[in-house]
Length: 65
Image 1 (spheres, rainbow, N blue to C red):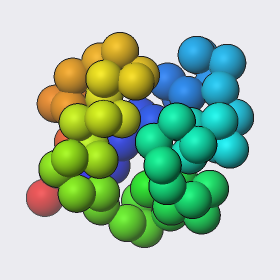
Image 2: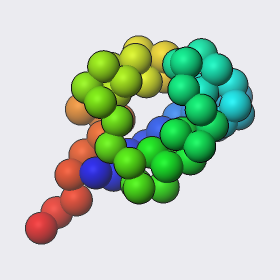
Image 3: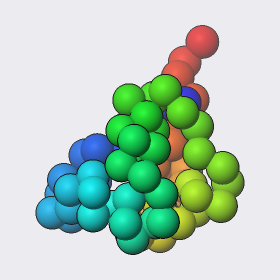
Image 4: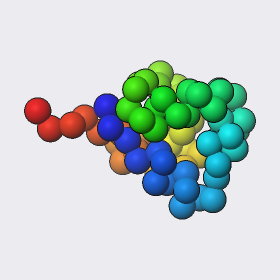
């Protein structure tokens, strides 16, 4: 699943460490999500969207097949 986390995180002036700390996850988790290597749980996706002030639908999308 592709996402806009890196783009929105940077626009918010947050480092990966900052985002991880606020979400209660590791920096490695943020790296994996940003690099499309890990799909977060629904709860984490919702917390990410809330923290980055967007909707889950805007934050994540499935690549075209």
